[in-house]
Image (cartoon, rainbow, N blue to C red; front, side, top):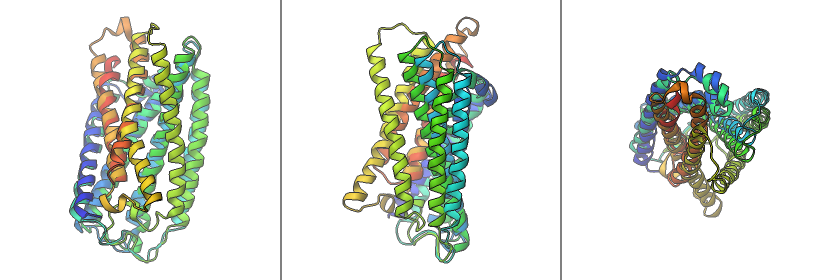
Length: 499
């Protein structure tokens, strides 16, 4: 793979991570994560996952940039370092996907049963989600450890140009940092506890953005160090490289699960606007939590059994987890299966939500609900272009002409994901800022609900749009970082109106 292309992608991921962190800091300054959690636990978890993902994506991008420039040596003793960062990145991404599903489930429950309490539903969904995260982390970690081989270099040589990889990871770090910084004023304006009381799914969805930002930041930093040969490509660093990437994958899947829950909540509220949504929220969160548990456990187990600690963990010329030897056919098959399942669920629920909103467009809804539904549409479209389209393109190319995009243009996934959650954070931050100008005494209840649904639609738009767009590139970490940065931006704008 062209080294310069990889560096550019990871640099973009770093930039997006920094932007996402910036908006997240602004969000948390206006409303703390605890307050968002009280209002909407799902949204609180989602924002937290975005922050964590932003940080991990940025660090991972830095790591691969360092690998590209030779600071981190592609030697067996750096295998653990590289694998660990990749594994953590996967776990953080899985957690973020789960929070997204929880958030969508809560939104759909609110739409279907607007008058029903959501406390029981939230508890059920969160319980299932927690079990899923725990099981997934254990399985993925075990699978990773069992497959580590410290005898070989963790990254293949002569696959990419080092400068390209560094640039890509730098961008990931910047985007992840921006997302994390924005989440601080976001949570200060509206805490996750406050968001949880209003929409558990949305709270978890926002929390997952934080985790994704942290994870992408970590992953970018890890590979930047690897490119600079600070982290050597030795068997001892296999675990480190695999773990960070694997954690990112887990967090991305978690975020996808939460996205499904968020869309399900929106659909439920549209269909049953007068019914309470609490039980539905808990039900959806529980189901998506179970799905996430199976996904993360299976992925961890398969990764562990495929990890070899003999030789260099990274082949020569490789500067991302996609082209590492541990990322074999079984690992890719498991991850791809659940990615397709979660993406299909998001597409179905998002399309249903679009149909319902168009069908009932003349129905008078509170301002909060209208804005929330609009935000959900943005989330749907952005995710479609940022993650769905690129991922499907990669699958088609790999299965038809046996071309792996990650081998040619670098960590496109991380860059796209970072852009996704950064935009979400920025939008959420802008929402919180607008809410500060509204009379809280008169419209607090209406605006809170409206912003929840608007943010949900923004998240859907960001994920689907950037997923498809950036899968046409090559950086898996970039695909993770870009949507997260966009999520942070989306979060800031409409949702902070009530902060």
